Structure formats: C-alpha cells, structure tokens
Length: 237
Image 1 (spheres, rainbow, N blue to C red):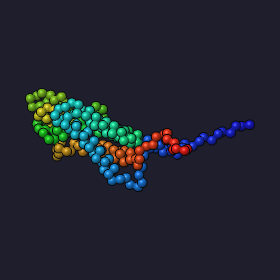
Image 2: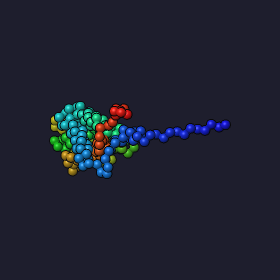
Image 3: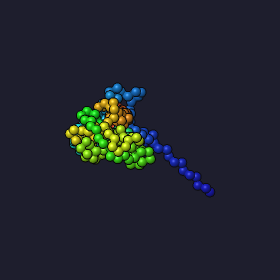
Image 4: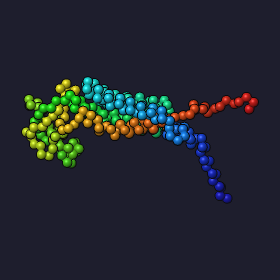
C-alpha cells in the first residue's frame, strides 16, 4: 500500500512573529507611532547626515585626507548603524541604513570640493592644450575633457570638463577656479553656482538615508522588555 505523506507542521505563530520582529523590527504600537519616536528618528538621521557631509567639507577645507576622502563619513555612518544594533532595530532596515550611509559618505567628497571652491575659490584664465573625450568616450563618460596650462605655462594635473565642449580647441582660454590654499584640485567655472549648490547632488542620498533611519528607529519600539525563553515556574505549579 502507498504510504501517506505526513502533513508538514505550520510554523508556530510566535516563531513567525519573532522572525518578523528581527527582520523589520517589533513596532509594538497601535496606529500611528508616538510623535517623540518619530522626532527621535528624524533627529538621529539628520544629525548623522550632517556629520557625514560636514566631515567631508571640513576635510576638504582644512586638507585632512581621512575626512576629505570620505573615511570620516563612513565612521559616522558606522556609529549610527551600531546604535541601531544596540536598540535592536530590524536587521533589514539596519542594512538599508548602512548602504545608504555608505553611498552618502562616498558621494560627499566631490560635493565638499565644490563647496570649498565656491566659498574661497579664485578664478583665472587657463589655456587649453588638448581636448579629449566626447560622445562614446569611455574614460570621460561622454564628456569633453580639456588639458589646460596656467598663465605661466605650467600644465595643471587635472583635466577640466566644465566649460569644455565640442567647439573648444587648443589655444582657447578657459576660466578655471582654484583654491589659493591648494587644498582641493581646480575645476572649470560653472556660472551662477552658489556655495550650497554642490550639496544639491547629495539631497537624494541624504533624504533616503534619513527616511530609512526614521523607519528603523520607529519600528524598533517595544512596549516592554523582551522575555526570556525560560520562565520561572510559579509556586505550587
């Protein structure tokens, strides 16, 4: 006779709830989260985003390599991730915060260079010596890249893409903004750029990072301390 297959036991409800709590956080509240919990998430996310961005700007301003390269921002993001682990936020949300924090920290150095040049940069005319790149060029990502020399004929170590276009030819003059203190490399001049304009490119990463931090902190809320697996027996049981 054919043997009947034994039915597989469904996972216990408390086990599924425990797994869901580990992955996404317990979120032990009814309806909307408490306002102070949302405020805590906003404060933590905004402070971490400001620390990540500010460390890159400070590193570029004062010429501190560890901060200018984004390493300080990675440390700040790691500190927030450690805090989320301490309050036992959901593992998936912790991972999301870690990824977005690392992306913000790695994009911040370029924006920090733009801030320094916008605040204290000085503009001078440079002479184009060669033009490379353009549509289909892999190294420049489709941009035209100009090699330039200063007014003394000394070639700059970096190639300029701002202001360098299809009509640019060797011998043309190109406006370049440089840091008089030499802490950051020069760039081509972008008309109408304010001191905060370079930070606009970070707004998307920062917004996503803060939002993930708010959700992680809000969903970490517990009404009571977690119980141990083994409970003491009451007298007379």
